[in-house]
Structures are given as C-alpha cells and as structure tokens.
Length: 230
Image 1 (cartoon, helix red, strand yellow):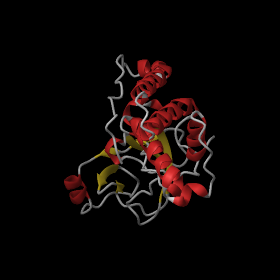
Image 2 (cartoon, one colour; image 1 turned 45 degrees about the horizontal axis):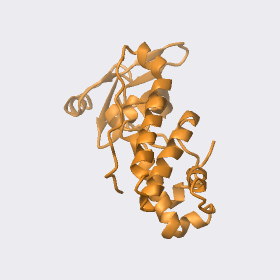
Image 3 (cartoon, helix red, strand yellow; image 1 turned 30 degrees about the vertical axis):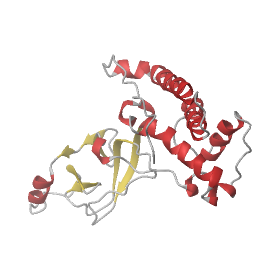
C-alpha cells in the first residue's frame, strides 16, 4: 500500500516535477506545502461523501473495559454521526447481540437504575464518543459498525499509508494532479478536474454490486469542488 507522499510524487511526475523526499515533506513550505494542500483537496472528495462509499465502512473490534462506559475509538477515528450499530459478542456464544441505541437524556436516567447484571444493553453518543450502559464491571468484546473518518493530512501524516482502498489510488492521483495544475496556473486544470470527477464515478460504479445489495439504485456524484481551499 502506498503512502500519501508516494501518490503525490506520482502526480508530480506527470508534470516532470522532482520527487519530494520523506524528510523534505516536513519542510512546510514551497512544493511540500502545495503538495500537502493538493492531497487534502483530493482526499476531501472522498471524505465528504464517505457515507456513500462501501470502501469506508468498517467494523471495529472493541474491548469494553471494566468501570469505563466510553469505548476507545479506532485509529483513524470513526465518525460518530454515522455509527450504524454496536453489538456484543457474549462469551461462549456464536452470534452478535445488538445493543439498543438511546438518546443522551435516556442514558442519564438509565445511569440511576440498577440492572440484574452489567452486561452491555444500550449505547449512546455524547461529545463525539460512543458510550455503553450499564457501565461494565468486566471486559466485554464488542463490534462497532461505523464509517471511517478522514482527518486533515498534515506533513507528519504524508509518510503514512493511505487509508483509502487500493482501487481508489488511481482516482486519488488524478485528483492530486488536477490540483497541482491549478496551483501552477494551468488554464486547462478544470478539464483535468472533470476527468477526476469521472474517475470518482468509476470508483462508485465498481462498488455497484454492494449498492444493489442494499437496495440502492442511484449514485450521488461528487459536486464540483473547484473552489475548495484548506
């Protein structure tokens, strides 16, 4: 799997740009800064529509620890706005037991209740965190079905492995190249951007079989993001 810097250098090579080294990306100025901006702009096309992409759906194996209601988020983090479900793998069982989603007000009431046991029953969201109730008195294996969140990429993350799937790398490279050409003042950059949009559509279509399994028939195309800036 490639790093963000490697994909950036692939895009730079298309205009005979010199590669940026692992140490050079941390310079924070000139080509390095523009490269980081181009990568963020291209990744944003995916992240802004991540809830429509099967590639961003994840299953997190989480261990709820004794005495702690808050679940530890994975890395990279989840988007709690689109966490779909939390399920408990009860010891000795071969199926997942769904927890019931409750609102914050109900959670506050349930904290005052005494339950027959402290096995996981409910989950709720508060301040960007996922919590379960009752508060466990022993460790429990949970699975959280969620959408992965794509944070802004800084110089430190440019040498990290890309969290998008391999099938998206060519599309990502096209987007980075379009933004590089914009930075260079190329009047044809919008044409390149439109080609990037076409690549995004192809990425959607490659996942069409999964969409159909969910009963979806329409694909939402990424809108024109020519005016996007960090």
